[in-house]
Amino acid sequence: MAYYQIQKLTKNTSDTLRTQAGAVSILAGEIWRETYTPIIGTAQVDYMLEKFQSAERIYADISINGYTYFTARDIGKDRLIGYCAVVAKEDHLFLSKIYVHRDSRGTGVARNFLDEVQALCRLEYGFDKIRLTVNKQNENAIAVYKKVGFAVVDSVTTDIGGGFYMDDYVMELRK
Image 1 (tube, rainbow, N blue to C red):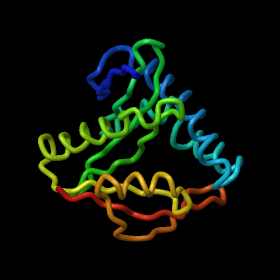
Image 2: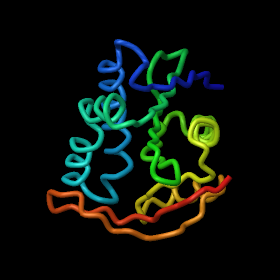
Image 3: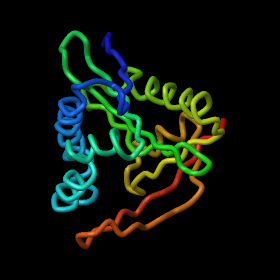
């Protein structure tokens, strides 16, 4: 059984926020290359890692752009095994990122992240829905989201620059 600890990262977390952002970025690189290279290719993965998952971007998202991150650390191995990020939108909480290292999938980490996000959604923001976008070809993630109650509510194609696009479903969980 894996033992892990969930930590909430906000702009007021600590003086080590830059270091924590760097650790999340390293984990992101590993997860993204494994998950998305077969779907969108190496060039787009590299572009998106730099644009959306770099240590600088994660730090800015937390310290300036209003994001809350949660990380999961394997206590026995003293390493990060997952992370997620949310940001408040006009009428919902947007689940921007939720990723778990392949060695820790199926251990309840994602479920615990979702529990934290749902509590934040209700208690801190007073929203009754969470939305996310997921690549239309990421069948495993789509299945997991449906299993926990998310439903597809829209389909979007987004120009992210560099000649790349994201072709996603918008999924929503109402509580």
